[in-house]
Image (cartoon, rainbow, N blue to C red; front, side):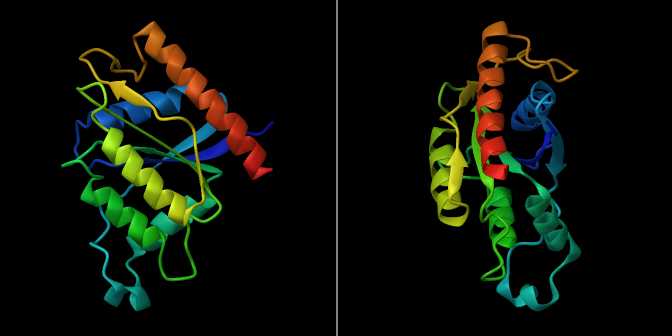
Length: 183
């Protein structure tokens, strides 16, 4: 069976983002089922409908990458009990123009990490609500990962055996669902 194309969107534009580290670890952990690619969102202009008639190339690239994917993994932090502005901006650009929503019909899965036990719970819930409205197929259970120093090593390996097994099971389930929906 061919690998599924997995577009990974990190909801942080921070260089040393722990969510980026988690996303890189998930890409490596799921590489038996997925062909992962990271979608750049930090170069998008702030959404403005006035720009739609002559869209910036970065927004067109975003749409192409979302549309080419069999599944989309969003790994996000939580900012002030909400999703980060950079992520909301990307969601808006990919959903436009009206009638050409790139999220439609896509299998989307959401997770995130922080230093607290459920630090991304509100952001994940809000993101699921937004994406259900746009995509209709948000899958997987809620996955909250408590980030601790050393959880992910320099080679993007999850060092804790229990967490690695949990995340592998999560990705296997996503692959099973995404495979059925992509067929």
